[in-house]
Length: 83
Image 1 (tube, rainbow, N blue to C red):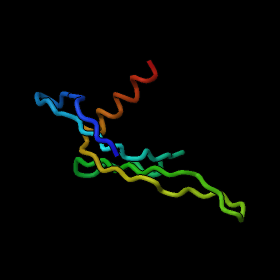
Image 2 (image 1 turned 60 degrees about the vertical axis):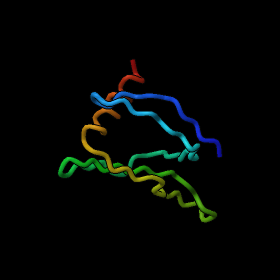
Image 3 (image 1 turned 180 degrees about the vertical axis):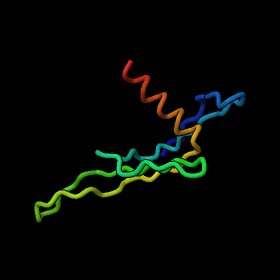
Image 4 (image 1 turned 120 degrees about the horizontal axis):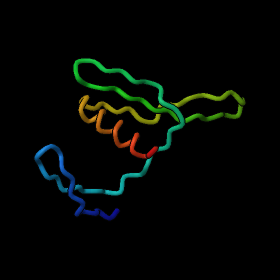
């Protein structure tokens, strides 16, 4: 895998260099959990699959645990897609 380096982002008053090891993307169809407790937001995502028995099921593919300010930043970024 090729590692890419060079993108710089600003986090508050701190500049961070982004390192990307080319991690494979995960695909999800639905959000299965959104919970905030003690300043941590829990998000879970599932992909809808169907086995040979024909019964659809939602398989959790990813769980994120974010500080609330990071979750709010994610929300703002997603809202910007609609503009």
